[in-house]
Image 1 (cartoon, rainbow, N blue to C red):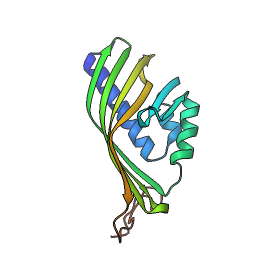
Image 2 (cartoon, rainbow, N blue to C red):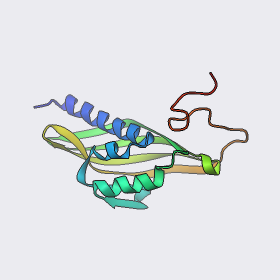
Image 3 (cartoon, rainbow, N blue to C red):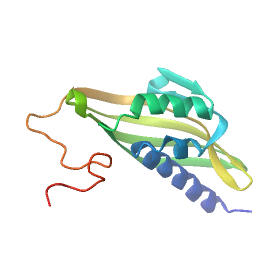
Image 4 (cartoon, rainbow, N blue to C red):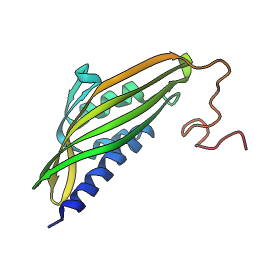
Length: 159
């Protein structure tokens, strides 16, 4: 039997892995962190999906292009654990660069998640966010991408 602190740590690690897999476009690994019947509500409910495969298919379509770069930083977890179920609220700061269109999106959101522990391992049962704000606009003149996980294997061309 795990302690409350061990459960909280496992849930934090789960959410941070979700963000890492999302930004590296490893959608299969990201979705393996979810229950088979997961539900999501992205963009304040503008996009709602049910089921692990539906989430993977959506993200592969929406974010699979290697010229779409993203950074999702989760912080300020408020995690409540009750046995084998848990809830959490998270702050998110994100940046998305759309190189093909020379656009940048940045914003902040609040996530509201539910988790379930199965055979000693925590999974995402529901995840969703509402935007605090979102901005989209052209990238500053002269801006170029000098490194990316996909284009340069993360290696900067400045060195």
